[in-house]
Length: 273
Image 1 (cartoon, rainbow, N blue to C red):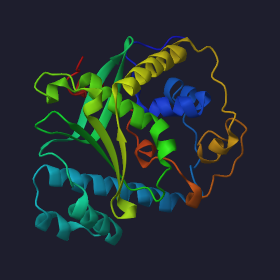
Image 2: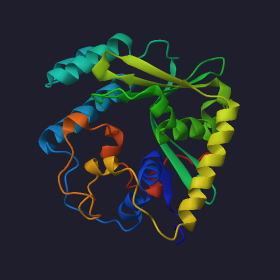
Image 3: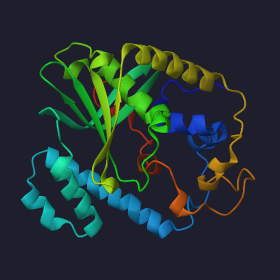
C-alpha cells in the first residue's frame, strides 16, 4: 500500500508501528474503532489522564504569565496541587528565559510531515536549546528504554531540523540540544537526554527508513511480544485475549493515551524546513 501524501507522522503513530504494525494499521489506516478498555480500572485510568491534562494546563497558563496566586486557589485536586507545587519549586530550574510553551513544530520526512508538539522549548543566549516534557505517570521508565522511545528520538530530531525560526534563523546544532523529562509523581526528578550530530544522523536514517517501510508495507503483522497486547484495545479483535491488563502495571505514555493524533493540517503552526 501507499500512504496518502497528507499523512502526518508523529511520535505516537510511529511508536504504535514500532510496538505493533497491526495496531498502526487498525488505528491510523483503517480507523477501526473497538470497544475495549486499555486497563482493568478505566475509571481510575481516565481520572489520571484528566489529572495529567489539568496539570499541563496549569503549567501552560503559568508559562503564559498567570501568577501562582491566581492559579493555585483554583486547583480542586490535592494530587494535582502537589504536582503544581513541585513544579513551582523546581520545574524551571536552569531553564533559559526565552521560552515557547506548547510548541508545535513540523519537519519534512520524505514526502510526508513529521510533527512534534512539545511542552516547552527554551533557547539560551549562547544558542543552547532545552526541550522539556512534563510527565505525570506513576512509573519512571529506565533511561535506556526512554532513550529509544519515539518521543525522545522524534522531538530532538524535529527541533534540530525545524528550530531555526526560534534561533534567529540559524539551525540549532544537535550538540546544543538537551531534552529533559520532568516527573511530577517523583517530586520533580529529571531524566536528561543530550543530543549530538551522530545521534541526529542516526535518527535521520532511522526515521526516513521507517516512513518508507510503512509506505511500502503490504501486510501489517501482529507484534511477537504478546505482553504489549494486554493494554491494547484491539487485543480481542486480534485474538490476543479479552481481559485488559492491570492498571498498576500499565507503563504506557499518558501523552499517547490522549487523542492527539487527529490533526487539522490547516491549523498547524508554520511548517519549518
